[in-house]
Length: 313
Length: 313
Image (cartoon, rainbow over all chains, first blue to last red; front, side, top):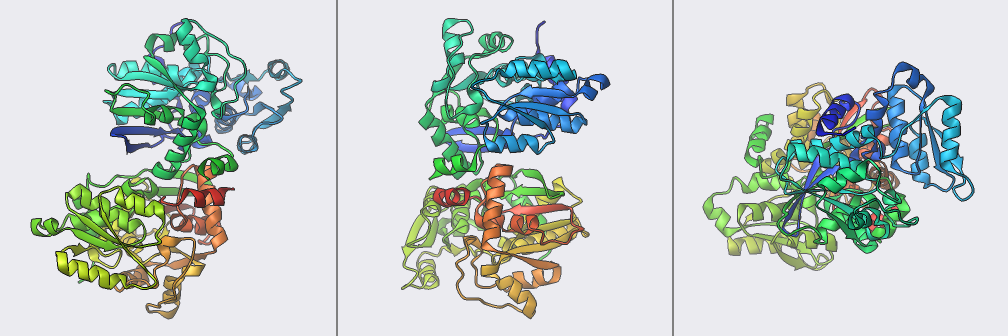
């Protein structure tokens, strides 16, 4: 099955009115025009609501009655919880016992049942499968699914509707769900816009995969960009990115912190480290010099207050 | 001379394309719908660009050749500097020697000449007058002028264009330039929307003036909301506010800090204490219970990184 831009357009219809149309904020820096698609201002605090809503809205009444579930310590958890709440169905979220409190609280605030597990001694996929087989709940995958990919791609679609003539578009690289959806719709709406991904040096699985020409898995990463710690790009997402992405820009931890600080103090947006990765790539000059008008998916804003304080102090 | 909503509409025409149309961000809290007009995302970091641009755009070629000036330690300085830069004229800004570095740097970054004075031993108005008489530069008043008032009112105009049926609208109370402009245009566009001002307990000059029925001056305030330390409402702004404002809501310093923290951690916006004052009033229940859909002018985001870190930690 091939995934196309038409599927992103269909996703946009499906989620219309159920997901916030986030603002695009222009910022000028280093002689560049940045157009920030502010998914940190999305309901639930990140773009993850898009893919989750797109998925939940395809479920029939029987499936909705049995609920949905996900395993995630981060923004996907909150996205699924909120999408389920809005569809009137139950969400069960499997989260590690040491997940950041702000993300557990955020997820619970949308009415989800939190199932805690010890990530050192228990297998979350086994837990998830056991619950799914017992309850009949539908598992919503975090990135490697057509509905997730195309739902996330609507962020780039909205950005291009507002700023059609971008020289380049860049998004963060976790499992590649967002990036591959953005690739598909950008090629359709603005074929001349060059496509880049931003990735932490400490979590460079997609960069390595591009070097190797095939999916490479890396050991667990502890980059500050906790949303981008996926060990490898997805089976569905990697071929799409390989076809359309011009390059993967790597950034250091210090460059990520500098971007979080710049966004907070100069643009006045709170952006979590994962969401600041592509901004870090741009302000540290890692895109070709001809790219002057640059669209950036700023993916989320959920972070511990103490972490933000530490970066600002 | 009477100032009317038609003057605000004229100001909107005058500044069109020279000032950012800032996004309105919806946030749900305590069963209320808040519509945040994000002037913290305005160029220069605050709504002050509106009034300054409205003023500068009325100057003829001769006046523009002589430049403009202002005395301010805060957002008005940056607003005048940026408005002047965009009009191709020179700005001279008189700032106290101990003004926050972030605000001095921000103002200087727009090409303004900074004239430093010792606020303990020198009279800034005398300095300003001396420079104005020597150079012929036009002084742009921070709040008590028709062009300032009507320029600032365009923020409420844009908010009401996007959300026409607000139960209430609230803005911070400094000298009253923003609030009085918002009053005029709101009464015209949405007569049923109730109007409130937010003010720090430690800088309650407008609240006291409402109690007395006339302008009251208070001693210098050291509220954390440094943009709202004006000693008294203006001669032009007070009668407008007295006619249209239903009440002044007072907030404590702790309530202001809690609002800054809530905006950063839950909404993902960096808002300086002055801009968070009306948010503090709303989330601490100081508006009548019937007000459910509330528009808030979030005035600016310029603050020292260390101050934000301290509030978050």
